[in-house]
Image (cartoon, rainbow, N blue to C red; front, side, top):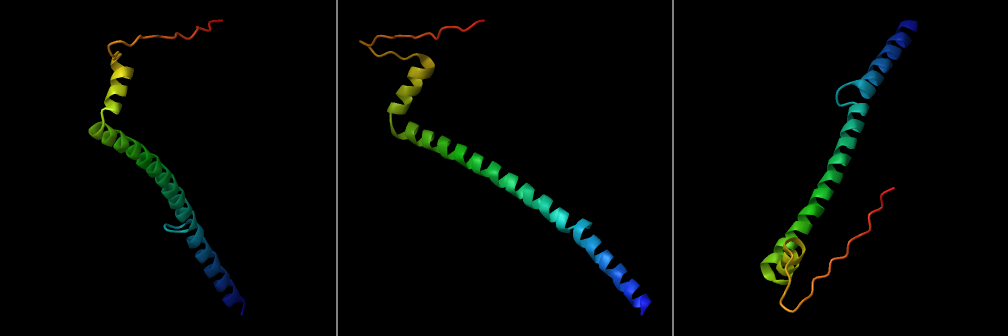
Length: 94
């Protein structure tokens, strides 16, 4: 009778070890779940960036307003009759 109890105890310990620490066990599963969550977050960030870029491309293809805005910002476009005013921020040296 005592031998059966010891054998069952050893079997339970072995199964618990496999459950917690073996390949495809509980700890491995939790690690994979955290990797999946991080990858899904990265994917959502990338999808948002792609949506913004796609909207810019569509706007550039379909309208001249976006092209004019980019030219004003990046190239300093000034239409005839407009006055260019530049406001400098005061430097805060201490």
